[in-house]
Length: 234
Image (cartoon, rainbow, N blue to C red; front, side, top):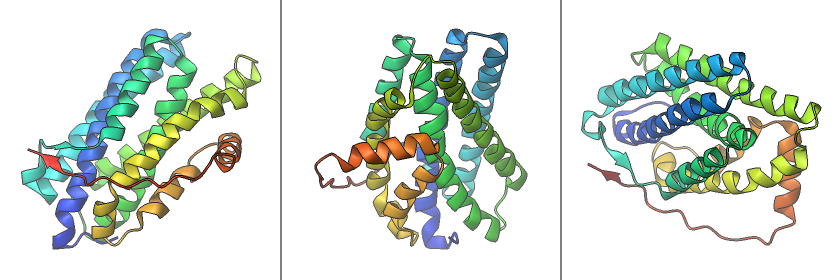
């Protein structure tokens, strides 16, 4: 994916979506730290919260470089707001494991998919903030890995099982699919297949989750989802 002149605005709007996701992750990590059962996890989550805030600033810089008029805009993405509310509900219930599943494992996975594709184009165009972008990706991978380890530890200790986590994942995965579909016009405008990006999300998920989730989906009646037009509210 190359960032041509006519692609700068669509990429900037994708980065706006990611910026808002980072702010949501920042809020979530701070709340998770108050629920963490040990000092090591608390330190990691507080560090993650600081990193997510820094990531949002990096995205702001990239947006300003690509398409300054989109700086400060808010994406019209109902599925992201539904995701936020669902995550807030899990935090209110103090269901720490569900929040690890929703934030570190699923949402970070979606972010990595989009960032990886965008990064390929930005590198080819010698875009600024190269070192910061590489650090950002490494940190996102660390956050994702932390969430997976916490869930795998909980399963090994018998505090939860894969089937329960898979059931919890269904609603979150449905919302990430809706996010990608809503963003489909932007993906197509930069010559990318949105359905391929949606499939890529699964490559970042643990095998035990993808297997059980796909089995659950295969048992459900098919449905057609009509993508919504993404607009920027400035």
